[in-house]
Amino acid sequence: MNPYYPKFLDLVNHENKDEAMLYVLELLKEKKIELYDLYDFFLRPVLNEFECNSEDEEICIWKEHVRTSIVRTILESTYPYLIENKKTVKKNNKKVVVVCPSEEFHEVGAIIVTNYFTLAGFDAQYIGANTPKNDIVSAVKALKPDYLALSVTNYYNLVVTKQITEQVKGLFPNVKVILGGNAFNKPGALDHLVYDYHLKTKEDIFILGGK
Image (cartoon, rainbow, N blue to C red):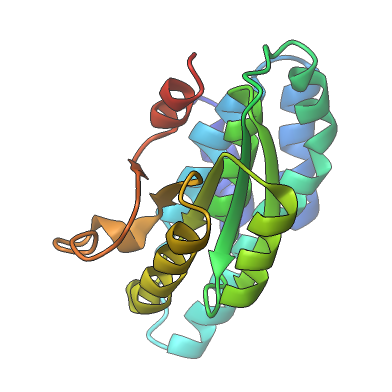
């Protein structure tokens, strides 16, 4: 555990958005943490380790939404650091489009993954959450990426994911399909899907980028 994480976790647990954001910005400014540390040891854990002590489901839902909002604000506020890091990254001349399919609203992980792709040398473009199949196909046609990365958290969205991957592969056979997200961790989730790569860790992205 990063030594600065417990304080950050406490601020987020108390929904103290302003202080949580200022805290990580100060850590970055003073070079006590790097951008990778922020993603790996602060933002991802604070989302994945969320536990609600209330028996009221509605309270747990809004608390999770507040937590996600805090992380999103931090990602947006620290984007200038990503821009600076990009200047030192060797480009691999590969383009990747990252997207969440329709009915998939968990997009923070996809945004972080897009940033990882950027840091791995890709020309990375995040399209958005809850993106209809036809819009994804349209984006692939217009942007002509080397890779299409689908981020799926909800297991029930595997049906539409299957439809998307089959259509993309049928229309654009040279585009490599990348799958990532918690939905694919369940046994058998990948069995009937058309894809080229399954990303499990950020190291997989850097290996794909030739780092």
